[in-house]
Length: 474
Image (cartoon, rainbow, N blue to C red; front, side, top):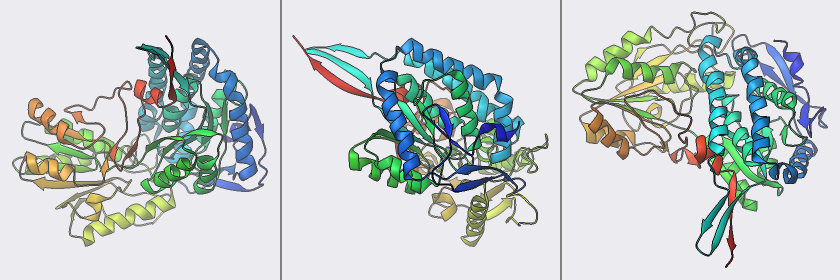
């Protein structure tokens, strides 16, 4: 598609594409070629205030719109996305480097399904709940600041913007500067679906500069942030200055436990898919394989065998599964972790220390064994195609190692079902896959510990955008 048609050099505020007052721009780079493929404006405080004011002024009318009417707007939006799914594939390939035949399902198709789920689930929310002595009302919060990362440029927007709009909130969207073009394609969908002016607005710029103003602004009622723990802590602290509602989806260092009785072939594939198919740039990827010693050799052999199914290369090549990392910064970060793993005594059994020999931020997928809790590659989120395999004696040690990190976002257990379910209940994580890779958009997503606050997805995600009011009457 012609990226110039996205009007990404402008903001979308109050139903119109307008120029930035700052006059400053940020280049958007293709990570496979290092070529500049677009530019976005860098918002100043005046720009941000315009977007917030537009959303604030639009809120009274939008929040009083009939739910059926809001649903119709979102249905039109989703139909547009379906009809232009190939365009989303292309834009995500260009700015993120994910091959379209890999990204279409997770980056686009599953987001279409997720919107359908939100539409169905919002119908199940009781907005007036009778109780002894009166009743309780659920009311939309107000203006939502949606601050999204670069790794799932459509999916992260869908997880925040769709429940906000359906609940009756208005939105100021701030996408990541690395992958903003997908957000502009989504904005085009909003515009052509005919949403009322000011209901959805988009601004761009450096995360700390724009985010700080959004997080502190008194007209913003809620901050929904996905990103790093450091950024989330800053966003939450700033939001609390005016007691805003906050949802934070932060990092992960998720374990996959293999026990006797596991379907090893299936489990290994599931782990490698999460670690390699988005180049490890997934907060919930199962980056720690924890294996009991009685099946350890068999599991490691299966990882080595399946490793060949994840070739790295040009994302436009149909045979490529693993494309480039998103940016030079991410490339350097992942390289440093791989070197650190070797320095701390882990054994590199697949992959290599990356060498920058050509254009593009390519890192060959890596598997480490002899990894121990306390090593940097075990404890810290890498956000790259790096898998650590940890040998443990038994179930008890497996659970202890699984919980031996500061994060608690996702997890998986492979083994005999009864034992696997028992283990799942002991893992400190917001979700656990038990002998399955199945995804249910009805189920909530969010973390324990330092992986965040609040939930996204289904009815639990929708409820984050309401506040409750008690009405007392005889």
